[in-house]
Length: 250
Image (cartoon, rainbow, N blue to C red; front, side):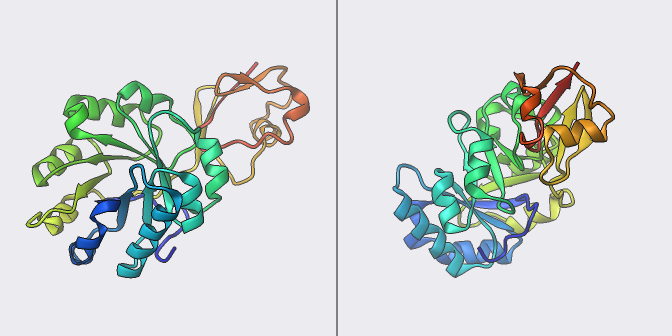
């Protein structure tokens, strides 16, 4: 996908429904020229072939990353990032489909869900669905950058005040996207970290449980859990750690 780079996190995205694509090309071009750095394609109930064709259409209009809300397998086939729903496929399974370098997010509807999300590059919340206090709570509890879906410039300002690092806006005539872009905080590149015994530590690519424990001087531990699941010692060498994982050792 043209415009994609490793560790990319959307900062100002424009949301487009797959069914709206025939009439919004110029609006999307204008939005990107005004500061939008990515396009979120909501595929809805469309099949994989339609979703892939939609991503290809957007890629032909603008040179920014596309994130597909829907099937990670279709996103992978299209070279796009993926936005997962709150429940369903695990982040680990989605990451295996996407491979490295493509952004992976999850849309969440409650601060407590944001607090336990792992293995992602970013989270998405709805300002209308949660309200500013809960958005702020989600930002404070999340290990990842949080973007808010907003409907206008006032919503974008509220999201920024709540601590969001980016916003997603619809394709609307007259929406002052350049003003929203100017008000956003500086870009945040996704930092790969995990939590080890309550401490946040950096994560290098292809790190196994054994590697992580050795680096921390904990190779002699007898019991290790990853996200609450016990990992047998015989699997420490081949069990890879993912960004956002919580590891406990005893």
